[in-house]
Length: 159
Image (tube, one colour):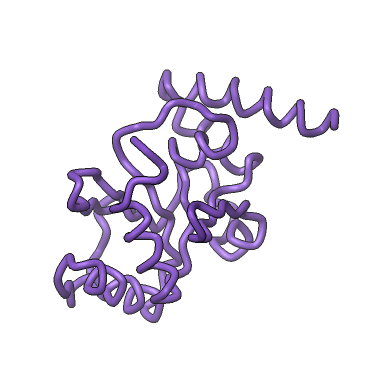
């Protein structure tokens, strides 16, 4: 996966132009912090309000995905649902993040790091919260990411 992929940039531009409140989480956030390997999907934590879902609906429509009226009221199975971009990359929209059940979206958003990728501002999960989420997921690849993230965190603290 290429962080400069035009479909990703198009998605982020549309999310930002529609003022969707979101945070990149998962493998992509790990890569932005620690240059770990990319996964095969993008995971976006969505602030789960009706107004924000309306903004997401608008962003998808502007992206060219069609008009998903149901997104405003749909129940995300197990807290997430998947969409596919034009380049076949899967985008998981989640409304709950394992490991951060005691944190609100707003708290995480206020702590989120920001990446400027070809003039597109992309919020991604703070390293401490990402470590927490990866530890809670505890898959083998998450364990590897945790080690890399903890090394980066230690280097940052030493600076």
